[in-house]
Image 1 (cartoon, rainbow, N blue to C red):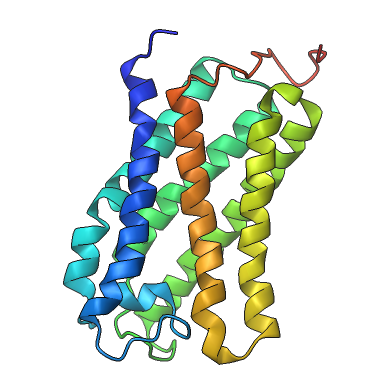
Image 2 (image 1 turned 45 degrees about the horizontal axis):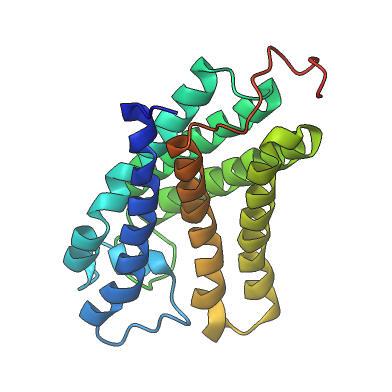
Length: 222
């Protein structure tokens, strides 16, 4: 298959994952006293965080490329009518989640690292988080169902199941373990979405070549 520009853009999803991982790993170096096992990753990018500048530098690729990759994925599957309507709906919702995450967290970054949720900025940050979580879960469930129904996109469904499992490990771990381990399990949830975006980017790079084009959900699966 001759790759077009939109296919090459899929690699931005991988670049975004690497950028996000670098920010998570190295930003604490600029935050004296930060405990990654206990504190949320969002504390590193709070307005008052000493690590904010380093976070912005390391996550610059992630901030831009994740949305570009997800948008190109949804354009590609829509124009090529990849798989079923259910599958494409899952992709579209996942892309919307990426946009809400990108815009919402930039508009409502935490004002104080590690502080209680009290002000308007912090409350809005949590509302954005709620939308991101709900859209992530719904989109992944739809993609899992689509993968079960159509073997041509089963691989994408399996990756969605892995991402969803990691996402649920976050709240389960937070509830089951002491507060000192909050940061560990919170990272399962955050990396799940970023990682799945990278997976979709790889599929875009390969042109979703194993996915069957279907006119609608009623078309029989061979």
